[in-house]
Length: 255
Ligand code: PEP
Image (cartoon, rainbow, N blue to C red; front, side, top):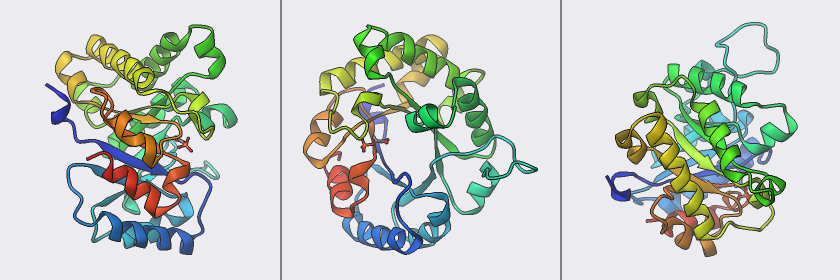
């Protein structure tokens, strides 16, 4: 099964940016720019505080909603946390799990990623599982080991069917927010490696259907050549998703 069987997914990770009114303004502009765009899934991930307002704003559009994190318990004495049922309640379709900033600053591990993935799936929330190596790991020739660890850890215990609801985001940490993009060849090499890992752990059929996004300084200027790679099925976009025009341009350059 070739790339044509996988609908590309472009997701904007707004991180810790945008008040409710700024979020609604950005989505309103984006909606107009991507109206009628088909053949690509368009997703925005506002901060928790803006999820409900953005959900209402995209109700009548071709834009889907993601949260930036989730906790694995459904409810209870877990101050500060937000669970999958609460995210479903405000209209989320996806949730980003294991972003490198959460791994770096908030103690996220492959094990917590796996618990979050399982909880999200059990509530029909689709996980975008982030994996990626640090610069020193790449320079030490450890990229494949790290990716293997992140992919195997994040997807441990899942059935092939469950994996089909997941998206893997390959985000080399050295390319996030740095302006340094992986070359299309570097991205393709790792995406192909990930697909092979999924073939070994699940099956060729499952691996050929799972979408693998690239993330790391994706901009309108470099999107097309990255998306043209056979195993690159979309992008997870940080900085360039904060303006409707640049995000919409990336979407346009994907289809
Ligand atoms: C990200 O944080 O997921 C990301 C890819 O950021 P940026 O596009 O700003 O590098």
